[in-house]
Amino acid sequence: MNEQIDVQIKMLDSTLEPPSYAKEGDAGADLRAAVDLELAPGERALVPTGLAIALPAGYVGLVHPRSGLAAKHGITIVNAPGTVDAGYRGEIKVCLLNTDQKETFRVAKGDRIAQLVIQKYETARFIAVDYLPESARGAAGFGSTGLA
Ligand SMILES: O=c1ccn([C@H]2C[C@H](O)[C@@H](COP(=O)(O)OP(=O)(O)OP(=O)(O)O)O2)c(=O)[nH]1
Ligand SMILES: [Mg+2]
View 1 (cartoon, rainbow, N blue to C red):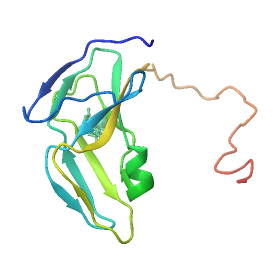
View 2: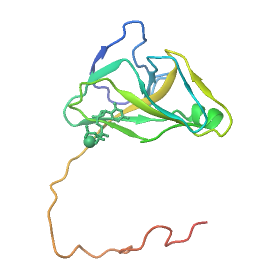
View 3: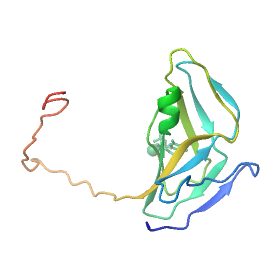
View 4: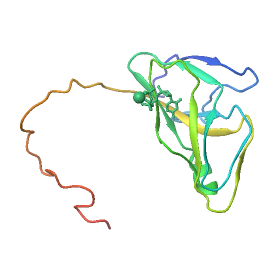
């Protein structure tokens, strides 16, 4: 069993279910839409979840897409994964995008639209230098090893 931490949440809409893990051991807790909406092909919308949280210091919330919505309906998150800072006390919102070219996607209030993964993170002291240490990769990137 993984480590569990306590996270205070505030439901801004008491008719919505709080975030929950669908199965024991899941990394992502499902986030629900606080409104009904329609996304036309190619359209995006910032969707409220009715949820505000207070993450402990040293933790970040990452708002990931749901694979089922992606595979079946082409629904993704523009800024995936979204970053919820530990100090953020506002409503968590999800920038949903309908990438399908033909189908309008309908969201009903209460639908699970995204998942929140809570992780520990490090911060860095950025130390300016004139020369970076050498490495095997050097400056090669962006397909330098081939694409297949
Ligand atoms: O998918 C997301 C991403 C962010 N946020 C909230 C929580 C986060 O702490 C805050 C700021 O996010 P971010 O730093 O990604 O956005 P920004 O464009 O840099 O805004 P800011 O200037 O407020 O930092 O917005 C969400 O609710 N959902
Ligand atoms: Mg920011």
